[in-house]
Length: 315
Image (cartoon, rainbow, N blue to C red; front, side):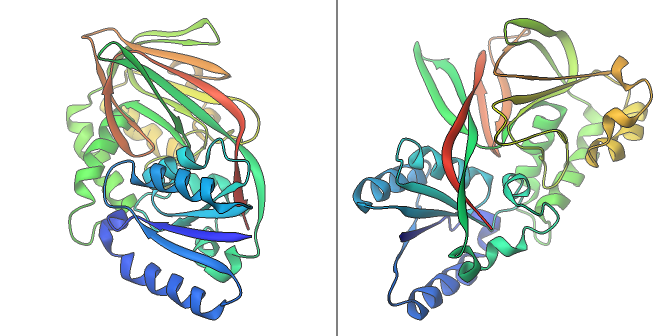
């Protein structure tokens, strides 16, 4: 077994780079009998290119660790995909670290994934991914999504949180909560048409929509508590356009993954699971949303589950 670590120096505001690099170098020195290499990303999609190259040249099974946040995981997963010898490893040193919460056997304890020696003793499982497809300049584009997409209030909050987390002393979860408070003032949603496995799911104004592989977003908000990374299904949640007061009252339950424990919530929220989902804007040609922490703006999108897409290391 070989090992490769891809470090995103920008993840977590860059505050983890020196620490994780030092730990990787120590791991290399303490394990001279193991083939362990260190790589850095320098720009967008670098992790995909690096992971694809590393897997192609490995000649045997190799664990390729994404050292960063959900965006770095997504990029690395896209490079790992299609290589049966490659296993995605995750060292969660980003700001949100939502995907690892679903991967971890103990969702309340993801800290073990920063223990590199423990990681080398892990085993791999096959997990699903989501293929996100859209048209851009007349050509179809697609990529694999590890965790999910957020549109409307959640998406706008994640976009604002992306900027807020650059502030000193603001954590990933803290930036999300600050962004929630700020976005409540504007309460911007979206007007969308959504279908699930060819059936109408929603049409019109809504506060937020989430199509997810994993159960968490926003640095620990358990928006889709029924998520299972190996069930061959996408979680789909939509919340209607609510008053600020109503959403504030619902938010604690929403964050804790207990939204549907609220009596009568079915009148304002819809949930299903599907293998294929389409989402299209009804006002204007494009919509802005967040996919694994990355801000995108496109026209209609299609999401298709890819069962057992990649091997992922778990501990």
